[in-house]
Image 1 (spheres, one colour):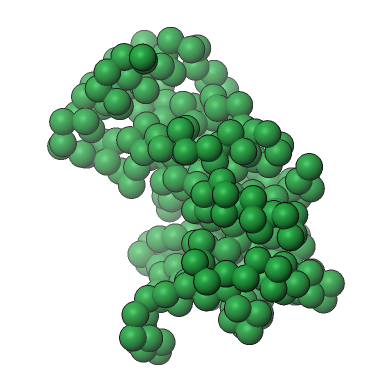
Image 2 (image 1 turned 180 degrees about the vertical axis):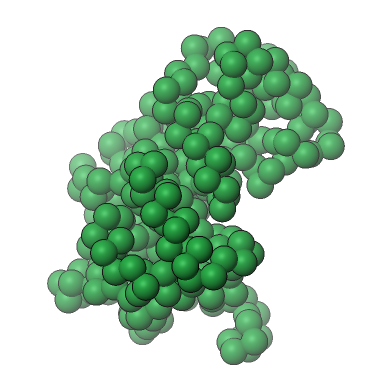
Length: 292
């Protein structure tokens, strides 16, 4: 069995776009306070977010209001070497070597102005990963008190199993939405349920395509979800979160919005349990055909 994940809030605040929100440090502090006051205590980052700037922007807010750190769980990711102005790699690539993972963990600690990261995820599966060696890195950084727990993101069931055999993982962060339901069939959610290892879910609103997509599938799905949302007196966004939350793996959806009302829409889904017919009506609209 996988170890229990340190308590995360049912909804997680995603900081992928924090650099685009154009908030000064005081405004970032206020945003974090509002999110915490709503009961969302987990914050999801990555070293590469915002062209390597997101962690620093969040960390500046924590430096300005250090007491906030005790009220939250900090999640970040590493393992992608993304080209940028000060990182002129020939190509984007993955790296799970001991030196790189250690270096990025220590950078994240400095950027976030914290002594320990609550959860670190390997951001993408590295085809050159040496699972035993990476597990040794995990153990060393945990023993040093720098990382409390480890997980992965975007890993297949077999990739998760390989690393989990060497070191217990606590989550797999996956894409799932009514427009991207692949995790329902690829074994990752089955594995999460079997292990009691609650997944985290990125892009639950399909990057906004649920609201603005003009392709046939998006329009068909939006029409169906609009009808259900109207009957249930809720929004399409809340309905999309509720559709994800209905899965028995007990997923943690990650918001991507700087709007406090957007986070409230996600939280509203905690009180909306879809029945089987409504859940499958959304699945049917997404697939364009009835169940077999």
